[in-house]
Image (cartoon, rainbow, N blue to C red; front, side, top):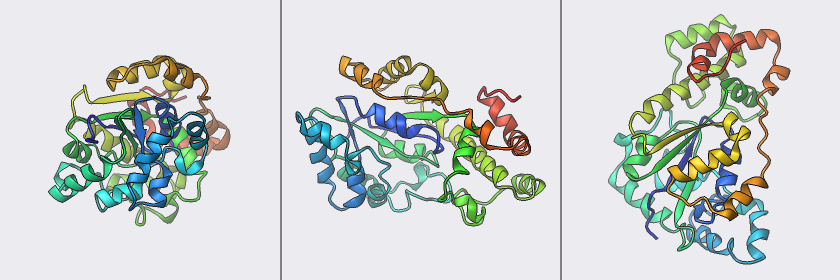
Length: 293
């Protein structure tokens, strides 16, 4: 089935995009890429069969609870579509799209939607890749999940796979600018400072990327507002996506626990570490309406 008006969830990562994706996939007209696609990246049609099976009585509810069938960030599939898509050293833009990539992406992703689930939802994090994706899908919709950068940083510092542990020379966000390097050195190469710089880099990339699309194609949702008023937010989101806000979707939203855990950074980080965050991220936090004590 031809992919029309695909919906892309974008964000820095550790921003609440996973729970957002899980709730969105409760919508009866949305298809998604599952972990099954990463386990068997060459067998794309399996994911399409899954999209039919999740709507079968009894069977569907069981499948949804199995980890391989849950919504996923499908980088192995997307790497088959576009080599280098998963971990580029800079944001991907329209100039990076070749005709073979465009053709292959349409061919592969067209195997996912079904007659009922005829709209494709994909989550990616890190670089926005908005310019690249819009070049492939001119009618795409983009939803940016924005979260207080201090909470994002604290979350990064609690995972062992964060690439910042190996230093900026080994991560995927490009070289530090002289100003960023100076700021990092000023804080004795603090990992708190480096994670904050990463958030700044990705927010700058998002600001640049969203200028490439119209307001009708880009929606920014704050994680904090999503937790405070999930029903209101999802009504706005479905309207933006040209989806019906169905009773079944409303009921499904209520079954998900959306808890704002943003205060955790205040408990986990010392006063000195919090001061580093505010020094590095202060102007960015203010730009997005986050208070600095």
